[in-house]
Length: 410
Ligand code: GLC
Image 1 (spheres, rainbow, N blue to C red):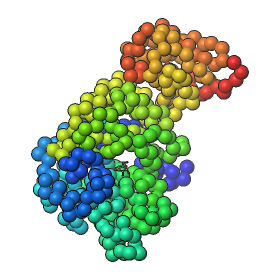
Image 2 (spheres, rainbow, N blue to C red):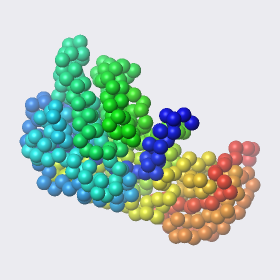
Image 3 (cartoon, rainbow, N blue to C red):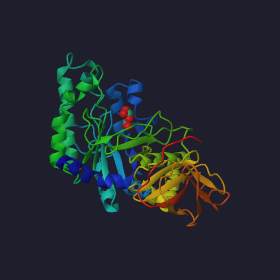
Image 4 (spheres, rainbow, N blue to C red):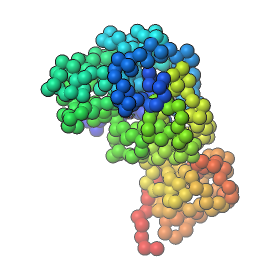
């Protein structure tokens, strides 16, 4: 291992233990309640949009309540939008007046969030959007409005410095909005001079993890609204909304929410690929998290309380779960996640190990293990109905790390 690889492995350690985090999209857009893209999608002029800052005064905001909910959900870190594409900062900035400190609320919400996280031992992430729709140069391009583009780029450099300097140790820098109209993907890092910013970030925060959205790969891949594993050894995290894909900020009426079994399956799928699941909530303008979302998170937390050993610090498992579910692993233990309970007997195929014991995490019950032809392992004596209707986990003690047998003739 090179020094660089071992430093990466060291910085990534907590992240691999964590597996589950809370994403929070919150800002002025919570007032119109049609998602965080409302300014752009409805082509709201910046002066008109800015009026929202005089109305944004979240009297029920309680950072401890957010962190408490994340804890109850079994989440180990949080990522808050310190500033989204509309340019409104939830923190105090010397280079912008468009902040929650200098408008109606007169509060540094980022500071309150950071302090609440620290009190609870929660890892801290900052989302920051490079682009800012308030700058005409963003739309017009460097040729037509070079000063505006330069001002926006300098704002990015200055604000990231503020965020990395004024709030103590930060665990994740979650960039977004690096894309620019008519600028090719490969030229994005140059447009923003991101290498310069990220070098500064690493000086200020030597242990931080930086995601891949400033035009440079850095530490983490960020599949969005789907769970897709990166190559082994590369850190990644899937971010996803509880509602359908139309918005991350608060939407007043959205009947399409994922169910608890769906959400648990996404989490398991991420854990199976040694990646994390960053699940989003969009609090209301008053600072409260909608109960429909909170109840789902609490249900996930109850499941994790029983089954967490199959998720936190999970590794890839060489054999899969077949039709009934999937697998995760840790050392010499494979975890069979049964989403579709088969009844009293379950079959796992292609297992190249000796299976020493099989235990249901939900009840502690031991299943009877029988070897059958073609590398099958049969688990019998199981209850007829699933002990956990979402995902019953069966821990399989193996004679070594999981090994899979190749498919042969039937
Ligand atoms: C997209 C959207 C943004 C959201 C982000 C989360 O890039 O522009 O609104 O914050 O995805 O991954």
